[in-house]
Length: 401
Image (spheres, rainbow, N blue to C red):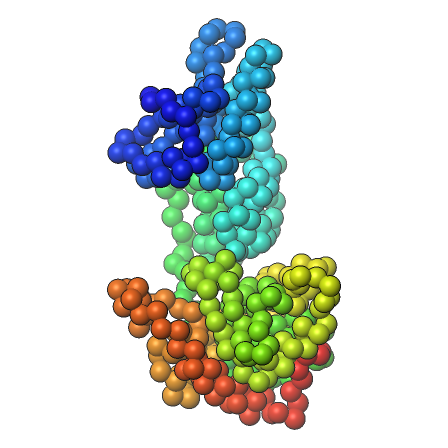
């Protein structure tokens, strides 16, 4: 167990072949545990006053907790020990009392919101399907059978895909709880999905596109949701990316929208050329935002960007205009299929969608960094012209509901 004056540089770069504890020379008891997989965890080791036994309490993961915060938390823990407290026992007692609903709240706040763009969907599934069944149970008391009952009830109701989604969220939540030392084991280990996830291939027809577009002014959705839906059709981007569009991302003069890496699914910055109808929508939204703010969400109700699940809910409840249900992601597939039908090359379609697969995947994707901006602009202009004809330009509304 090497001792070392820990530095941020060392913590960043530490790599080991076997699990190793590095003891900090600056703060007594603070330990950085590093695994061969690169997982780095802060712990505090202290001597319990009641029986002189060594105890270890986990502070959290690096880099969620940096070196400075880890030292501050370690000092607080050691001060409590000096006053006769037993932090490890206190933590065990808190864990034993924690309900599934309380665990879910912690999981959402400390993991999902930080790591998952779809955290709101996790929260929704937990509230809808998990908490009513086991939310009041102690998390330690939940058995495999309790989880199986939840997902089988969903599958038996003919909702196989939903059952699989619930299982995935519950597995992640309990796995995270074990990983962060909140629970000793997960009740989800070994549980298999009750159905295979269905691969969606829904593509909207021209008639459906026309019905949806022209229903937007009278469907009862907000002006912002209506404009987001129109931009989904015009750009082919993901609903979360469109709904979260910020004024700083738009260059009106260049007729372009640059989505920062932190807001894209693959973590790569993405430039979206704006066809004239899309530019008109965004210009109108920019004019409506508070110009005194350095940055602002273009589509907002409370100052915060509209959540993508609000778009999905609007589609589900107010914009189903055919016998076959559709989702906002189906619009993205429809745009891709439509551009292909207009003769746009597959690698340009992938560039428009910011996909790293197929033509842009593998080794070729690493070395081929060409942005294809002129080709993307031509493709989106071509698609927008086609879309205008499909929905009948006399009925198109831009920038207003």
